[in-house]
Image (cartoon, rainbow, N blue to C red; front, top):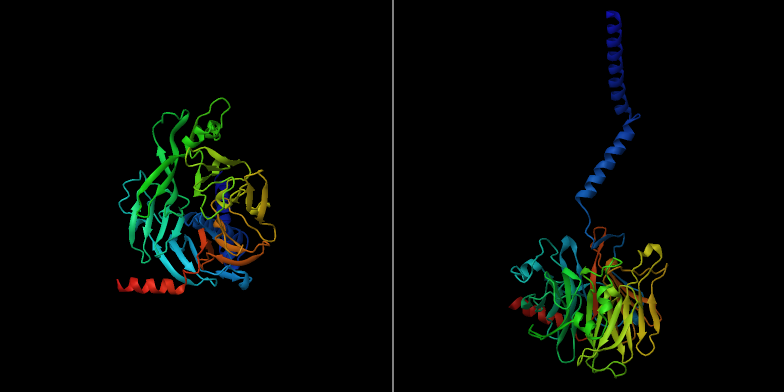
Amino acid sequence: MKSRNYGLILFCFSLSVFVYGYGVLSYRLNLFPIPLIQHAIKGAEELLQLTKTTVPWYYAETTRQEKSIVHNAVAIEPGLTLVNGVGADRDLTTRVVNTHGQVIHSWDIDWFNIWPDATHLDTRPKSKPGGHILGMMLMPDGDLVFSFEKLGMVRLDVCGKVVWRLPYRTHHSVYLDENDIFWVPGQITRRKPVKGLPNHVPPFEDFTILKITQDGEVTGEFSVFDILKRNGLNGLLYLSTLKSRVTTVTGDTLHLNDVKTFPVSMEEGVFRHGDIMISLRNINAVMVVNPDDMKIRFMTIGTVLRQHDPDFIDGNTISVFDNNNLAPDDDGYHSRIVTISAIDGSVTERYSGDDEQPFFTDIMGKHQYLSNGNILITESRKGRAFEIDQEGEIVWEYFNVLGNGYVSLINEAQRLSTEYDEEFFASRISACAGS
């Protein structure tokens, strides 16, 4: 019996010596299973590193290095371009750039410095970037007016000093009419039931249209819910319900993302001077409202998908940034710019991406018609602004390249009129240095 135990002990000892010896030899000579173990360790380390350094949604990997591409210099609309987005280290950047991407002027915009006492908010930002800038306007004196998305509205002078702050949750767009009145979307989170809005379960968003003076004072406030109800469109208030026999809704039901008025510089048609246009992304609707009685003069629903930034083209036509948010562009879907007739509802596609020239942003996006007939388009999620001519050919591109293998979000790009030239900013920058 003892001999059997000694034999088993001797076998186990020999096996241990062999395993140890093979382990040392395989490590030195990189024999099986060392390569497999090393591969597993490397994979685990990479997975751990990826988990620790999750890339924010507003950054995307890129191999691109150039910030600007001039495809056709003579076809570009003259003027500098105002661009805002997210920069390196999660900073908010608003820059004036030339066609070569060189920065002529910039504002350092820090939510935490501008609004350290935001008592009008239930929840305040806790980390950079603190919020996004959606909606901006450069004023004749060089001041910058903008909205921190759903946080408040701010006016900075050209030196970056706060002129005023409006403690109202403005967002998405800033439009200045010919009477020097700002028209801006607003939002109020209702945490208690509201009379007249049955089956709206708190918390839900109450969407408002604001009239704001040059001094940051609210002089008018209109409820989008009231507009829909006044026009007998109660059904549009409940499109986000998901239950068969219950029409309760909650949260961001309509998603108001633009407000503009029909300018006196355009000849009237279906639209009249002062008419208010609104965009309701979550119900795929654009409406033009008579400001006197809030009756809807024109409405298109379902023509575009998750749209942004409708603009008046003439008295009978609007143009819309159609995100066409069906899938990522690598699945063959593309965003587009379309015009819609208020006379017969017909839709004309002005520009769309394709396999050779992809163009897609699932959220956000802006477009601007230029005086030479070109269109400046902001492809927000791809960190790109580009200008097309009347034939749809790209004549200029700008990329928010960070220089470390990433491109970052562009909220909006605007071509400035030629009065905002390098001398304009140089004179004001020197004034800043002397103040």
